[in-house]
Length: 290
Image (cartoon, rainbow, N blue to C red):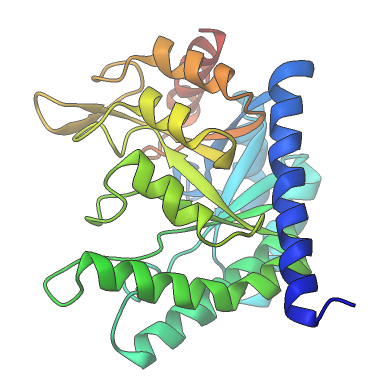
């Protein structure tokens, strides 16, 4: 008979194998289903949630990335509006990870961060989302790279049972936090959890300063569960409209196809009116068309 630890490890590895097998099957036997989504903060704030979400549908978006909401009444309002507008909420952006990083040496900061993630995971369950975006750590003069790695992994492991219970993936994103600075590092960080509930949320624009997104996509492969789309001009060090920066979008689209990704790609840009959002939606169509 297996003891509990052996059984748990075997079950986890089997789940990981299933995730990998599914990704391989998707890349070889099934057509890609790429869906374009919009970040909730891009929609006009002066409008009601229902009107915002209807606008998103009208200009061509197929999904929404929401942000963490602590007030249950507001969370219910968002759910009802999304249902009425027929706009699926596919992911939740956790809002506490910058100010309260899991890599902090302060127990109170870490506790606040964990509470924020728990709220985000429960938001995701309520809204029908299958992932929560998490910036795992921040490297700064008080926190070394190694400390950020070890501390954040220790705390994220505490969240895995809740993620599994709610069936919501914790999706690690690479940002300008001086952490996970290479694609192999990112892959290793995710793999060390040995859990199908820890995956990668890949932001195409965030690594232009020090890498090529298509290379990262190919390295991360089936670990990627979501994409963020934005553009960056290397020469001027500025964020720019989609297709006006330094990203080779044809190569990015090719890499997305090579890894067999199916799912949502969310635009993360400044907000604007209906005409602005329609233009963004059209540019995403052009990117996805290759």
